Image 1 (cartoon, helix red, strand yellow):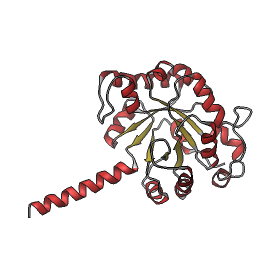
Image 2 (cartoon, rainbow, N blue to C red):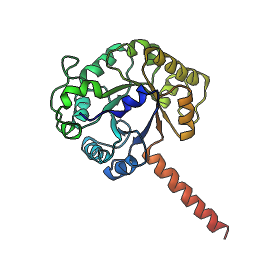
Image 3 (cartoon, rainbow, N blue to C red):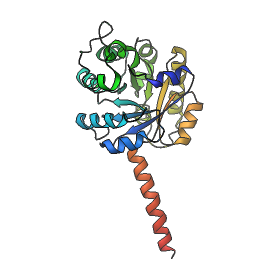
Image 4 (tube, helix red, strand yellow):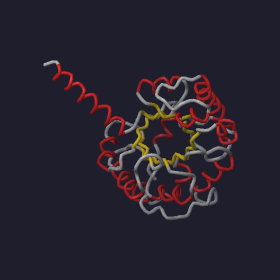
Length: 257
């Protein structure tokens, strides 16, 4: 089976640099895959990506060594199994709030005897190799999102669940759950403390903590704070920011001429 290189990065004490795909396009996924990310996550929760397009995006990513991940819409076994069968090497699952939900998440993603995933890696076997089913339980990454006050309180028991490989902070949902607003540069005390608490708890369990960030500058700070899986913005934000910057620069030049 093809190696999941993210595990190696973590084993060496490094941080994974992840990209985020919200645009439903195999070409934009291919472009992003050539920009130096360690991994790319296809957002099927809040992005505008459906299953069929996600498959073509996975195919585009596989033209490189970048590790393909997907965020599913919910902790739903059919959706989890199907995107894994399509070749995702890890899944980020939203709104995991307690041990029972974490156990259900793991169970849906693991082949027996560790779980109840049905056999049928229709595309995964072509991407990964004929021995996929022998190694999938170890190689694939299962990453619950920690984004509610309940999840924060139950983090120790979530991390105690065998098969949880990392966690991912949804900073906007977490901020709202703690009575703050979802905004860039969120530095309200309770949110800052919660993000630190998540890192400290993950470190005690030996599990990498991940987080979504709006920029390389913030991502670097999060790594310094102990996060070992950082996402930098997203494809749609890169597109809009660069387009706006170039148009603004030209209009300013024209206005000054």
